[in-house]
Length: 304
Image 1 (cartoon, helix red, strand yellow):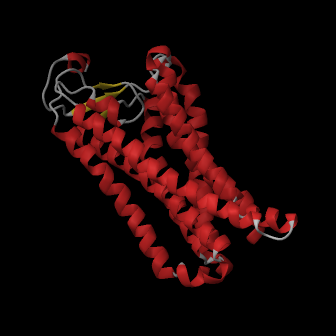
Image 2 (cartoon, rainbow, N blue to C red):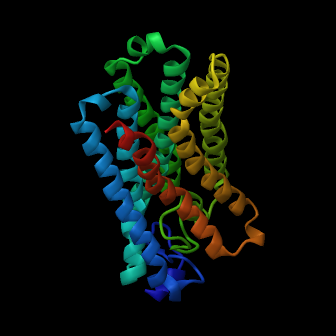
């Protein structure tokens, strides 16, 4: 295996995932929080899906979007954590080339889907607070289903060019990926050709697409705050704003780790590689773990 790690090749049959470079001896201990995280993700999101399905009073647009979020979190976490744990526990570092691209597609695609779901949830809060009498007529079950389908298709289609580009590059430097999963930039950097198109498109997705999502959420909450400030009493204003609390917490838990990871990679020359890898894992695994805790405590429990 050691020879294949350094020999030049054009079409690698496998990649080697290093896990967390520099902390290989600590992999068993690092696996503990990863395992706990995955357990919480599975139990928390499955419970949310079950409660919403079995409680008729929760059959509303906000909870339908929450179910979509739970499904997305399950897919996102399952795309990364089982393989990471197999590296930590069994030193199973090999991943087939096509499996690597598939993992990359699901991870980055469903990250974009989740970003879109937060936009849809912001729109739901906007309609509920700014146009409460029209909420049921604007967000019908059909409209909610179309929004969820649009978010799914948008996220999956936007990421597809990155995967197709990564698939066509010739790889002749190494097949060693310094991460626990097939992160897009870490993989394409192994190509022995000009990858500026891949990098440019990746930046386009991060800044333009994700930026549009953040902008839409920001505009929605500006309108929400304006509507709340026009309410007659402080008690009513606080109660109304409280309905947005869980959504705001989930947004912060989603975008802040991503921003932190991006800044860490931008200043990578000053940051140890193991820390860059850890942050790239955290922005993917923390939101799926925190979302069921946030919504379970602030939304589902009081309603049920």
